[in-house]
Length: 356
Image 1 (cartoon, rainbow, N blue to C red):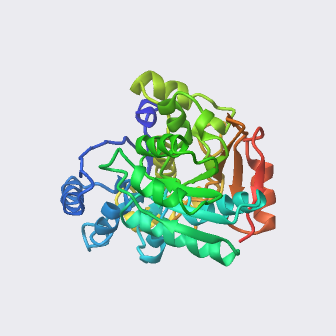
Image 2: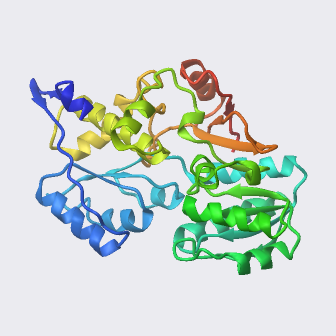
């Protein structure tokens, strides 16, 4: 709406505006593909989707000759980058970044024993596997692995009891935020006094609202909320809450910035129809970074496989209170880190280079 209100974009001497079409796939891969087919029939050049289980099937059809479209994905699974899709752009950070940062936070506290009570499903399985590999490689011990259905269950006493019985220092938990809040609350009521590591699907700012306090969330690490990363623009949250009457999340913020990145790529490519040229133009379009004076998050480029170079935000809770969120540069080397640190407008948050 903002792009259109400003007059749209200019390509080849003509003005173009954006048209948004919405269809619900109900997290059903077949429905997702059917929806994509409908978008194809409407001559869509890009489709946004936020779940890997539905994004992956769409990526099997988005390169069909004559019916191509750019897959604007929102998923932290590293698997998406291994599919070799030439028309994919991913608007969020890979969870392997969080695995490393979260585990190192726990090790610095002297914690070596971790129990896992993570959501069922392919995404949860990937997280558990990735975390276990890193944790054990660093000398840690996984004392229990008790996946639970965060989508249908509300009573997590059974897997929690089994996990707590192994006397872990910390627990890896997470799935949808609402039920993750229940897991935290129930674990504390069952006497668990250790720390929590939350997978990136769970959002601590939302959980704090659900629990009406951060008291039981002590010694916790997860992704930092949008508002915890202070940008000089500061207008996105206000506009979003006024219009939609709901909390700002990374899902809406990153996809918002993703639309602007797409618009820049279209202008740079000089075409509104050739999606291969548009996808290829992202790199040049982002040579001038998208900074926080105009957008709710910053974009410094794009990886060859399609993931946007966005800093990972990490937040912790100590003594029942939110700490200042930290930002991690996970791509490039020291020189790139220095460039990002110099250009970034997020001057109120520590910016850290993540050595892989």
